[in-house]
Image (cartoon, rainbow, N blue to C red; front, side):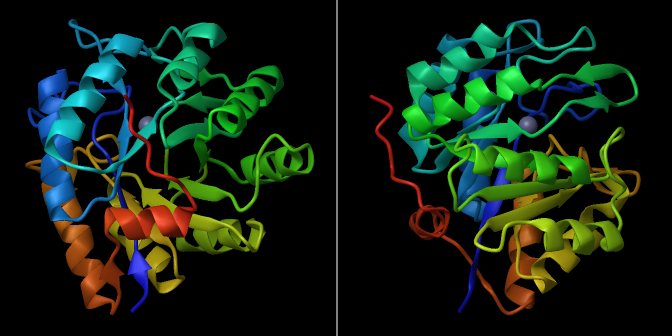
Length: 281
Ligand code: ZN
């Protein structure tokens, strides 16, 4: 039976416990949340760090601490954000965004293929020089890019970097649908975006807020993998907060099985994505 990967994005750059008390903020909470999500079927953990005051950060010591706590509990593919401790003031300098990948060399890292107006409040800057540099750092350190696509033009940008040798095929795309400032979370957009991807790619999608379930259903029908988690949705349903990341993973696993697929194990996900397990010694 075909295997489907569930990625879990446990904590993003936005929001805190006032939005959902279940949002993991400390290293211990993050590791425990990943572990619970792994038990429910997640095979990739997409990580953002928060400092002692809850502010997004790219601090290497925090990534190391969370990864260590995760590895004490389970083996799951580690996917670190490169979004750079983004606040409403913007991201941190590029050196700080790149450094954790040179030090930790995780199995995966996010690669946001363009600049956008995020939440209609701030500029999420991924300029050409940064994308070239990050792509090279990923290749040098065997980090598989999770190419996050918020808008259709970002797919063409990814193709440009494939041609330049900055992204190595086969690529893995993450279509983020319905983010304020990005493409709307419609099935038409999903079908169109999918049709633009290089044919040898693997791909996954996540719909934010009200398009979450429709995008998941359509993605599975189209053969894609899925991403869930409190980074993308603090709500489980309209007006109902999610109890945990694991609850969102459990629902995705149920839908995958109902659709006639199997939930990929961590080993199977590595095989599908073409990545080697790492020790994080
Ligand atoms: Zn993220």
